[in-house]
Image 1 (spheres, rainbow over the protein chains, first blue to last red):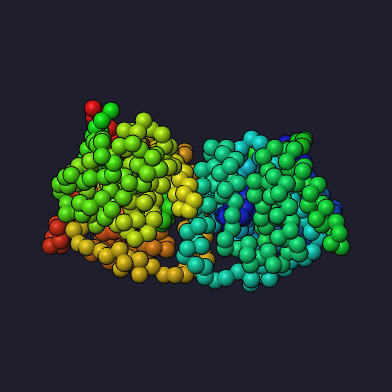
Image 2: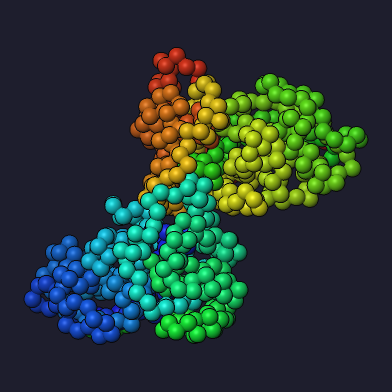
Length: 309
Length: 309
């Protein structure tokens, strides 16, 4: 194999109660990437469409991730990467992670799959660090593993793959405003009340149980965030109205996707996800803020191969 | 049926990362109770052996729990209760809860089982409140449900039953010192660092996953407590030495049982649990403090019926 074309999906990190640890993978929104072996070692980004991103490999998340895996494999070849972005940078649905995890997934295929998903996530995290300034795996892991993941630890990296209930859909609205990562971080409290933290880990525990049991009622009961949402939601215009509308339309739960501004909901079945989509469209269309709405099954598979040559 | 004799087991609450929410049920240590229908309504405690506890029903945890379930059922009979305590009050392995949950379990049988385990836990919690001054279900629930439980919420009560990996054993040491509940509560911080709380809920999530997958390595990786143990362990003499010895002898993890003073470990297989028992005996036998050591399989069944008449 000399060339591979892949679909690298968007992902939702945090997932209400699971701040900094949980994430899940989307299905119908994502980037396309082509990765091609070259005789010359190293990484060249030869094409970027759909977003303005740096072409120098060492400043590009896909480039840095690619360099990390090629180095670890001591590869006797290099790669050219073409990136076709559909996920808008800064949307809060894992745009940079999709580039990073797509690059390492594709190169692992070209190498003959020497690395497991834990290792791939590790390499992807190196790329992600270029975008966010810190090593996070909560968007990289669900792209690589598919479905729901729990990042138990970052150093040493330990990702736990969780099951994906079969009828789970996500509806997401991306209000096209900019939230600076630094601002989203600065608004977080350094300390939290023990009683609130207990409620949060009770919800993380019950959400994990609910995913194993495909218990949609318990998923709904568990999607609460007592710690981060009360702070970060202030940065997202009309957050409370959107969340309320999502729940009223039948969503199991709703919250901030990543550090925002996107707002996600999880729904049982496509019909409810579509109802949520039409309801939040009504909420947002008179605000004067541009927005996009995405609807997707939760993608248990993760990154997909489109073709190989 | 007019009379039932049951075995009401000891339980371990908190379970390291799961402060205030997780618990599991033991198998070989527990109280025996006889509950007998009486024509006269109300509850009489007719015998208490093994501990000095109040005989007035409204001051006795079993009595209060019994009154709660009889009232809810609008029962046309009363009960006499005999309590044979083997679990020492104040040991930190759910002594009062065993009395409360045993009483409600037995009365539910006498009533023809009108209530499910959620409801029984609720009634048991009413009794538990007499002992601890607050309604807690983290020892009552594992006795009623068996195995591992997660108390997602206390009001309204919502217990999530978790799976029990088949090879899981607990070894417990009970140093016979008194820790006042008020002191164990007062030593807890009101606020905790967000970063520590995140680590804690990552561990709760991975522990729940590990129980579903019978992943003993992940159980071991998850049994950490960054929040409570650093404070409460100060109240337990030689805690650090015992924990270290438990882990060195092969335990998957170790921590404070309930609010102490008992220290529990979880082990894969009986052989390791026995090795842990002999190792911690050596640690404690020269301390001048009286102690008991318990070894038990994790009991997936919960309270057991000995006989019925």
